[in-house]
Length: 146
Image (cartoon, rainbow, N blue to C red; front, top):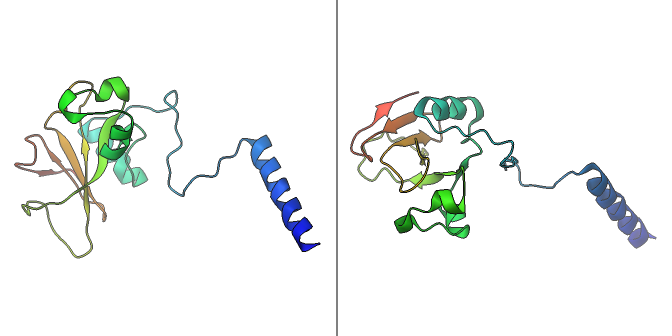
């Protein structure tokens, strides 16, 4: 009887998921199709989005995700293999210590002003505790945005 109830419950749950179109996805995973994803790739736009949502806009993918789609950095082919996407979300190590350090703080980076071809030197850096900086000279200097 117990096995029957477990099987019946599973069948009901699967039926609900199937007919409602619900998807089971990890918490925090962005669900946006290319048709509904608004491209945000300016310093101000991304900084404001990060402040409001705590994550990058839907047009950003990590280097690993881009590589899985066929991106090869030396070929400058991101726009070909992932149209409308920009690289972002990877950890920035802050090895030179030019950004403020604090216990437990991690930094992540995202490309800014990318449209196609090879990536440029514009990056936004954002911390796990809400700091946001920009660089226009590929990490030589930083300006605080938020």
